[in-house]
Every structure is written in C-alpha cells, then in structure tokens.
Image (tube, rainbow, N blue to C red; front, top):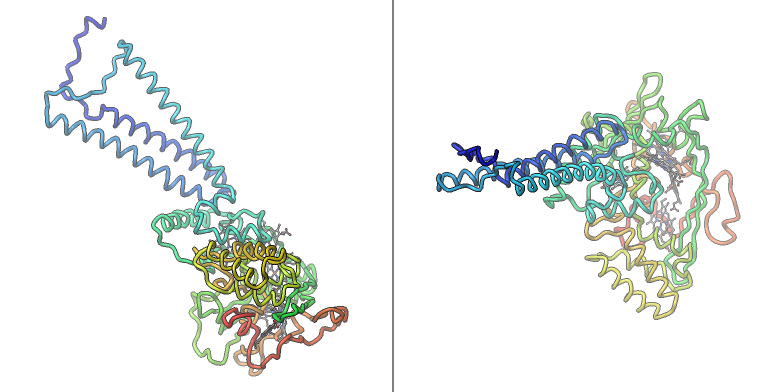
Length: 497
Ligand code: HEC
Ligand code: HEC
Ligand code: HEC
Ligand code: HEC
Ligand code: HEC
Ligand code: HEC
C-alpha cells in the first residue's frame, strides 16, 4: 500500500510541525497538568495548606507553561524563517509515517517519553507539595534570609508548631493573602530587594484569635506563676543575684476564675486599644479601655495633645505582650547568665560575665570573624585551661544561635514586650505617665512594683530562703536613680549590662 500512494506533496508545510514546537507543546501540557493538580491540592487541603504551594502553583507551574508556549512559538518562528529564506528547500518537516519502522519507533519513544514526563510532573507536583508543607522548607528555602528566624524557632517553645500555624492560620481570605505575599517575598529574595533585618512587627500577621487562640484557650485561668531569674554580676568574683517572682497572671474569663491580673487584657468584656507613634510600637501616648457597660476611658500622656490616627489604632491581643513566642534572640547578658547558671561556662573564671558579655557586644562581619575573636579573646584572658576551651565552645554556640550578621539580626533589633527590663514592654503603658481624660489624677492601675508580681525572694545564698509572701521591695544590685527606668540602662546601648 505504501508503494502505491503517492508521497504527499506539502502545499503549505505547517510551521508548527517541528521537534522544538512539539517539545514545547509537551512541556506546556505537562505544566498545565501540574498546575491543575497543585490547584486541586490547594483547594482540598483548605486550612491545612501552606503559602508555598501558592508559589508553586501560581508562579513555578505557570513559568513552565510559558516556557512551553515560548518553545512552541520559537520552533514555529524558526521553521518559518527557514521556509522564507529558501521556499523550495525541504524543511526538516515532522511527518510521521506509521508504515515506516523508523518513524514508528520514534513515535513509540516519543509517546513513552511524553507519558513519563507527564507522570513525573504529576509525581513531582505531589512530592513538592509535601515538601513545602514541612517546616524545613519554610526555614531553608530562603536559607540565609530566614536563618535567624529559623534558628531561633528551633530553639524556642514552639519548635514543634509549624510556621504556617502562626503565619497563615485557617480561612480563605488570609490564605489567599499569604499566597500573594509568598510570591511577593520570593520575588524579593530573587531580586535581592529585602530588608536586613526583616522588619518586625509583621504588619499583616493574623490577629492572635485566629492563630494563638486555636491552641491556647484564652479563657484559661492561670493564677500565679512562679518564675526564678538567675543572674551573675559583673565583678571579679562572679557573685550571683537571683530574683524569685510570683507573677500574677490571673485570667480573663469569669467562668473560670476571677477576671484580673496580667491576663485581664485578654478578657472579652474589656477591650484595650492603643495608638503607637512608631513602627515598633514602643511609644504609646494614647490608650482606650472599653468596658462592658459601654463606657470607655481614654488615657493619654501629658504631651500628647492630638487625636490618634484612627487607622493606626490597634486592639491589644496576645501579641502585644507575647510578641516573640517563636523567634527570641537572647541578649548577651541573658545568654551568659544562663550559661553560667547551667555550668556551661565555669563561674570560677575571673570576671567571666563581664569579659564574655563584652566579647558578645562587639560587632562582627560574619560568624568566622566572631568565632576567631571569641577564641583569641578568651585564650588571652584564660589561657589554655579546659575551662577556657569549654567557654570558647559555649560562647561560639551562643553567638551562632543568637547573632546573625548577614541579616543584621539580633536581640537589639527586635523589641520584646513581655516584662520591662531590657525593653519598655509593660512600661509602655504602665509608666505612671498616662492620665485618664476628664478624670484628673486617675492613672493606669497596676503601675507599682507589687501589682504585676510580688518579689518572693532575691539576692544570693541564704537571702534566697527568706520568702516574703506579701512581696518585698526590689533590692537592685546597683544604686538606682529615680529618674531612669530599667530599660534606659539595660537596653544594651550603654555597654553592659
Ligand atoms: C508560635 C507562632 C510562630 C511560629 C510557629 C513561627 N512564627 Fe514567625 N513570627 C511569629 C510572630 C508573632 C512574629 C512577629 C514578631 C514581632 O512582631 O516582633 C513572627 C515574625 C517572623 C518573621 C519576621 C521577622 C522577625 O523576626 O520578626 C519571619 C521572617 C518569620 N516569623 C518566619 C518564620 C518561619 C520561617 C517560621 C518557621 C520555621 C516561623 N516564623 C514560625 C510567630 C511565629
Ligand atoms: C499549633 C498550636 C500552637 C499555636 C498556634 C501557638 N502555640 Fe503557643 N504553645 C503551644 C504548645 C504546644 C506550647 C507548649 C510547649 C512546651 O511546653 O513544650 C506552647 C507554649 C506557649 C507559651 C509558653 C507557656 C509557658 O508555659 O510558659 C506561650 C507564652 C505561648 N505558647 C504563646 C503563644 C502565642 C502568643 C501564639 C501565637 C502567636 C502561640 N502560642 C501559638 C502550641 C501553640
Ligand atoms: C498584658 C500582657 C499579656 C497579654 C495580652 C497576654 N499575655 Fe500571656 N502572659 C503574660 C505574662 C507576663 C505571662 C507570665 C509568663 C512570663 O512572663 O513569661 C504570661 C503567661 C502566659 C502563658 C503561660 C501561662 C500558663 O498558665 O502556663 C500562656 C500559655 C500565655 N500567657 C498565653 C497567652 C495568650 C494565648 C494570650 C492571648 C489570648 C496572652 N497570653 C495574652 C502576658 C500577657
Ligand atoms: C497598650 C497598653 C498596655 C500594655 C502594653 C500593658 N498594659 Fe496592662 N493595662 C493596661 C490598661 C489600660 C489597664 C487597665 C488600667 C485601669 O483600668 O486603670 C491595664 C491593667 C493591667 C493590670 C490590672 C488588671 C486588673 O486586675 O484589673 C495588670 C496586672 C497589668 N495591666 C499588667 C500588665 C503587664 C504585666 C504588661 C506587660 C506584659 C502590661 N500590663 C502591658 C494597658 C496596658
Ligand atoms: C505592669 C506590670 C509590671 C510592673 C508594674 C512591674 N513589673 Fe517587674 N516584671 C513584670 C513582668 C511581666 C516580668 C517578667 C518578665 C519575663 O518573664 O521575662 C517582670 C520582671 C521583673 C524582674 C525580674 C527581671 C529579671 O530579669 O531578673 C524584676 C527584678 C522586676 N520585674 C522588678 C520590678 C520593679 C522593681 C518594679 C517597680 C518599679 C516592677 N518590676 C514593676 C511586670 C511588671
Ligand atoms: C542606672 C542604670 C540602671 C537602672 C535604671 C536599672 N539598672 Fe539594673 N543594673 C544596672 C547595672 C549597672 C547592673 C549591673 C550590676 C553588676 O553586674 O554588678 C544592673 C544589674 C541588674 C540585675 C542583675 C544582673 C543582670 O545583669 O541582670 C537585674 C535583675 C536588674 N539590674 C534589674 C533591673 C530592673 C528590674 C530595673 C528597673 C526597675 C533596673 N535594673 C534598673 C543598672 C541599672
């Protein structure tokens, strides 16, 4: 039969029939297929999905789709050019004659190849989907960029809570927003246009009731919590100074306990709103408390005469105190205190606290430079003793876990709102400055030292056994001037502490 049929004379040979265009078509179909699959996962996974699938389905898959279409057009353009240049020349046409064993073989291989490709792209999509669900992906895909957050997270309380639980949460609206964000951030990383350090607070972070409160029951009554803070002073002898506090955490729900104490702010009946002048929410001149009976009290600092910008008023939630639940960088002071207390640095090394804090407060260009400086600094001071070697290992680890020179991230860049020693924290509002509008003399309650906590014991040695249930005045290790607040000195800006 093949012999009888005249060879087909292509009148107008199709410019689409060439290997490049065909490959393009296969890639386009494959990626479209992957897109559909990813899209389906995305849809069905609902609240369990994560933002990075968005990057795959809406950025990577379409990119391949366009690559395929591009190849298709490119192949066509090439063959047209060839046809134009030399209309009579037999353009390498793609014609398949099933009778021809060579063509048949080719076609079989091509079909097999296509099928394998489609299969792999489907499997690939599925695999990638699972990989992106993991925490490692979030932390490692942008390697250097997110290293600080990732390392701190792994050393934090929430190391087993996936990034997406706090950063995305459930529900369609935020979900979409996070996808768009994901794509936007990916672009930032690719193009090198991101800020160092990454700014906090994350302004589009979801409200805590959709994230934190999915695991932490806001109605919980915590009552009093005892916490012990171990310190070592800067002197030669490494004297310790310990504070035992009873924190009046209380609760915010009358079904489960008396509404009051620190968690009073989480009560559903009272709403606390505030206006901050700066992006890091450190200067708060205006606060409004709305009560269940519909009344409201506004507190202002004396210098704040204006009305706050309504769009910038924020309702207080968990994050206004627990703002670093997953990414805490320790200050040199805190990290060294802890290592000394745990014996990871020998407390007998003379002036260990001051020497090491000094080394950790210097700026280094990178981890290697820091490690070298730590080693030479400690060897100079303490020679080749085993205690010196142990200290070098410990201090280098402290540096690597809390300081990130590439991203310029460390404790001093990220204010923490809980407490009031290193940052203003609670004292942003509880500073005895804010006064109720229309009620002269009425200040914010809970501003003296024994309302949020009572100091049960403090000092060193036998002093720590003298418990005072009613609380005792704080005996600061150094003379305390009246006009300064804790963070004025403890902010790390004036050398140690
Ligand atoms: C327990 C909740 C929680 C988890 C889990 C969590 N984060 Fe965060 N993250 C936050 C909060 C809250 C902030 C905002 C901090 C602030 O306002 O100071 C934040 C901030 C960030 C920032 C902005 C920069 C900064 O340091 O403030 C990045 C980047 C980030 N997180 C990445 C991650 C990555 C990557 C993971 C997983 C490896 C993760 N987060 C897991 C709660 C969480
Ligand atoms: C997916 C569940 C989950 C989410 C979401 C979550 N947490 Fe947690 N959180 C935990 C678990 C579990 C622990 C206890 C960890 C442990 O003890 O090992 C914890 C511990 C804590 C603690 C310490 C409690 C203590 O005993 O000292 C605080 C504070 C906290 N979370 C605040 C937050 C805040 C704020 C958010 C929102 C940004 C948040 N959590 C989001 C599960 C979660
Ligand atoms: C006004 C500040 C403030 C707010 C708002 C706040 N907390 Fe706390 N919370 C604290 C302090 C202070 C502690 C004591 C522990 C500490 O100092 O680390 C604490 C303790 C906790 C603990 C440990 C208590 C326990 O019983 O084990 C959890 C969990 C917690 N908070 C979760 C939340 C959640 C969830 C929200 C939001 C619904 C929230 N907090 C809102 C200040 C606050
Ligand atoms: C944005 C401002 C703001 C911040 C930040 C803030 N508070 Fe408050 N707090 C208030 C206001 C307002 C009241 C109610 C005062 C009143 O009615 O006189 C209050 C009340 C309290 C009360 C008394 C609750 C009761 O039993 O009636 C305690 C305790 C307290 N805060 C502790 C803290 C602690 C601890 C922190 C830091 C972790 C903190 N607050 C941070 C605004 C704030
Ligand atoms: C508005 C509530 C509030 C008031 C008022 C307050 N504190 Fe505190 N304080 C806290 C909280 C919360 C912490 C715990 C911080 C943490 O867990 O990191 C704390 C921690 C401390 C610590 C332990 C810090 C450490 O690292 O050893 C000392 C000491 C202390 N407060 C002293 C005082 C003194 C002195 C005053 C009065 C000038 C005072 N506090 C007033 C809320 C308050
Ligand atoms: C005038 C500056 C100044 C002020 C204000 C100040 N401190 Fe200190 N504080 C120091 C110095 C200096 C040391 C170190 C003493 C040493 O190491 O020998 C210190 C040590 C401490 C220590 C023990 C060691 C350490 O390094 O943590 C605690 C706890 C402490 N201060 C808490 C507070 C609290 C809480 C407040 C606010 C009520 C406060 N300080 C206000 C200067 C200050």
